[in-house]
Length: 336
Image 1 (cartoon, helix red, strand yellow):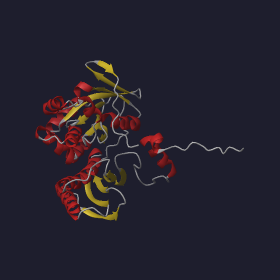
Image 2 (cartoon, one colour):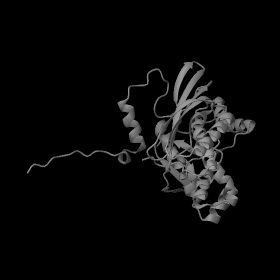
Image 3 (spheres, one colour):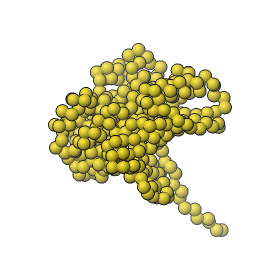
Image 4 (cartoon, one colour):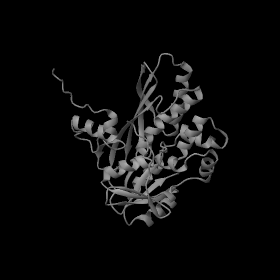
């Protein structure tokens, strides 16, 4: 009897996100002419010494990023589909020039849902001065899928994920965990005090103005936007820069209302802060020795930012609470 030998075939789950990106990168021709290709928040094409074009795309998939609901929810989804892409530009210090929208819908989708989606999309387009200049529509055999690609520009050198060095300080904008708390409240049908958090999840605000000012400061060495949670996205920053980080959990920015609602609803606050995802805040590093000047710069431009840690030579993440090193089990959102 002959036994047929078969080799083990890897799955996307076994590869993971990093493995998939590297596998794709090896199989594609080099991005000659582009300053930055696969692996950052956006691709970068340098047009002149002080003019860069940025190009990015994000997917929103039904059952993963959203659930089909009322026209009001579709309206929020239209806003969000553009906003999450603009957040990628914000992380690099860019501003939008225009966007194209791909939309696949099941044939049973209602026209009212489509109208509401484009109403919300138009609201975000006007708010952030990003015209919708084209796209595509198609039928989907299953759920809805939304693909938005945005073209942007920067008049200063874009911020990349790869610029952090040992001794740089680690910062984050705004507050963490708010969108994740909102999503938990949506799932459980909780309103009232949770309403501001529900809206934060439904209508994120990309930090475009803040990102431009961070890039213009000349003191920020690396940056990305927080979409998969601090614990997950910090790994991206560490790998791209070849450094590790020490993070003080006690310093993570949060509101009293956030803490109070987590306690009342018995939600795990630390999990939402570290792994909740969809914050769409900016995570960045400031060059060693520039901290005092950077704080003065942020006060001048009213940038709400918080120092939460420091880059180190050892390429590992170390988490501290109350002055003691702790083990963190939260890893952020994983795509596969």
